[in-house]
Structure formats: C-alpha cells, structure tokens
Length: 541
Image 1 (cartoon, rainbow, N blue to C red):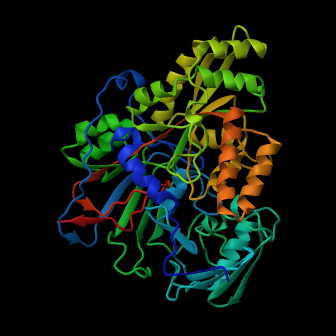
Image 2: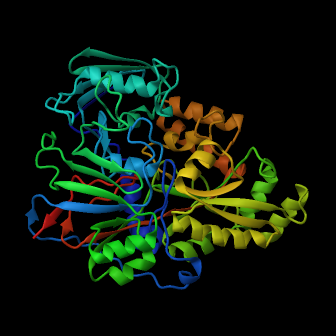
C-alpha cells in the first residue's frame, strides 16, 4: 500500500499560503465581507461605491474573549441567502453548504488550516496504482437518529453521489467511482476507474443513513449539531447533538442561522442584539461597531469574476472577451468596492493555493482602453454594443462591483444595463439555465485545484460559462490523473494560462472576509473554505 494515514491526514497545500496572505495580502489584515455564489462565495461590500472609494480602512481587532468558558447557550448567525436544498447531496449553493457543514460529515473533514482529517473514518490506505481506497470507520459514531454509522451507510451515500444506480452522478467529484463496497461493518472499499489526485477531497461529502430518502425535509447527519427546523426565507435551526463522537463538542445548545438578505437589516439586527455573529460584514461597517463587537479578518480562497456566456454573441468571440478584459481596471474595483482588501487575480484560482497558483496572470490584461477599442473594431463592433449584466440582488458587494464595471465598460462604447435578480432566480435561470449575457458572482475555493477548475470542462454540468476548449479539457484530464507531483502542478498552471488567454471571464479578485462577533463569544474559526463552523464556538463569563 502506498499510503497509510491514522488519526490525522495533513493536507498542507494551504497552510503556507495562508501564512503568506495573513502578513502580505494587501499589506495588512483588514478585509471586505464575502458575497454569494452558487458553489462559492465572495466578499460582500457596503452601501455603494460612492461611499467607499475614499473611506479609510478601519482597524480590525482580532482578539476574541479570553474569559472562562461557559457551557450551553443559544447563538444567532446571519446568512445572506436562503438554502437551495437540505439534502447535502443535492445542494449546490455555497451558502447552503456553509450551514450544512455543522450537520453533516464525510469520511474526512477539512479544518481551518485547509488540511484533511479523518472524521467518520479512523484511518485509510490507498493502493499503489491509486485506484483503490480502503477506509476503517471510527467506532462510536452515531447518526442524529441514534443509529450507529456502518460501512453500509457509507456505501449507500457514496454510491448515490456517484450515481452508480442511476448512471447520473450527483457530484462531479464522484464521476470516476467504479464501485463502493462494504467489506464488513467497519470497512469500506472504493474503486476508481482511473487515478484521481483530487479524490480524497471528495470524501468530505456527507454520509447519510442507508436508504434514507427524506433528507430534504428532515436531514440526518453525524455532525456536532442536528437539524431542528427550517422555515424557508426565514431561518434554519440546529441543536446540540449530545452523542457527537468528539468529546466536549459542541458547547452551544442551539444555533439559528437567520436568513437576512439585506446587509442594512443585518447590521440593525446585530446592533439590536438579535444577532450574535455576522459573517461577511462589509469593511466600512466595522469601524462603527468595533467598540461593541469582536471583529475578525482572514484571507479567503474565493474568486470574484464577471462571467461571460461564451456561447452567446458577441461573447462567443474571443476578441470581444479580451476587449472587455482590457477595459476593466481591477485596482479601481478593489479600492472602491473592497476598500483595498482584495487580492488581484488573473484566472480562476486564488493565491491561497500557492503551490498551484500561476503568478503573473493578474496583469495579463492591464487596463488599455485603446487596445480594447481596437479589439472591438476587429470583432465588428467599432461603436460598441449594448448588453445586460445580471447580478444577484442580495449581495451588495456584487451590485457595487457591477456599477463600477458598467462605468468602466462605457468608456469603450459598451452600454451595460444592470439587472438585479433574486438569488433563487439567479440559481435557476443563470446558473442552471445559462440564460444570461454577463453576470457577476463569486466562486468558492476547494482544497484541490481540479475541483475548482473542472467547471470549465466543455461538458461539465456546472459549466455555466458555456466555455469550450478541447486543449483545456485535455490538460485538466491529464492533471487529475498525473502521479508526478511536479508535472501535475505545471499542468494546473497551464490550465490557468489557457483560461486567461481565452479571456473565459473577467477575473477580478480574491476578497478578504470579515466577521463580527458578540464580545462574549470565543472559539470562532475562519476557514479557507465557505463554511461556518459553530462546533468550537462558546460563551465566556
């Protein structure tokens, strides 16, 4: 056997990058707040570009309460979007997954350093050819209904995700799964069709009870909190799972994830004491609450971009896409919308993934209005054209960004109509239906570059860009099966270069993230993933 991991599997791709970003990103630790994404998010901003372009960045205090730990208590956390599914195998919205992180677990589980640790599994082995994975389950793990977790439950869950019975995988990360077998009550074997360097990250996906078909109404997982109630558009409530296998966790009795799509309403709820945790709060709001709340800031593994519908004219022409890239001033957007607290990017990967990140692409399209106009003329649009930019209205950060983008594009004759759309409409019409021209969104990072970049594969179900490049498909396919680490890194860097050269989108920034906390709370952890982990949070005296 090639690998054997017990108790802790370190995946340290992100650790060094996070240390670098903590000290170097934008020169300090201040942040803007994140916004929404279908399978990812970005930082959300404030009340409008005009009010933020010259505002000084507030000082962010990162000290959490040092008081004695108090067991119990209820906490209210703001989330900016409704959930798309309670069934973790069907959910695609990052805002859903950030909540369900507290309810469900997989064989493995990520931590705040971006490392993978055994969760339901106790240990695992990978065959020398990379095609067979054998997991030993941890004893004493229970579902929220009190039943013990067995290998049959894992086999059911991952077979369902792989679509072994239907022929239609529910998650692309499981497309290469050939079989999932329960060898005995505590041993599971997974066989792949081909070697996949990214497959371990897929095994953070939720394990649910065998044959359970009511996950979308009454979800049952193994996490630190169990489902209590869900009122669409209002809240999801979870409560402490007393039989959680990790000792002394969680501390809180109950957590309400309150859906407040308007940032101003969220701020009022925080100030009134109705809310204890406000993730993704705008940087410009921190100064006015700094004396009354703990404020935290950390880099994110996220990508904010302007997406083109590559299959729709005029964006099917690479010259048009390149022209719009040349017209955009990313520095102006970062300063005006994120108060300077975002890291400029040039492709769909964040510097947080330092090992795989291709440097230099962020300035591939340095602002050049004359070049932009020339490319438009070559493409047959010497006087520009009109287009519609659809933006999820519940994310002020994206709305603010859209205003700047529209003003910048007008300089080259491209007249942009901004269309605010509700989040549910964005998911259904734009993300799933691919019915749009331009849109602004944030895509969350994963622990492996393949799981980030595979949405650009020509026939990927989540390729809402309608991007199509056979060379890119070949390179990404080679990267995920490449066993030589150095070669794999180079392939992922080449894939980023292709996206940049094709101007598949306008890649703007990886925005930083802020959180405001009740001063009596401590133990809050920030992840390089789009999650809210309440298992470690506790009240202090």
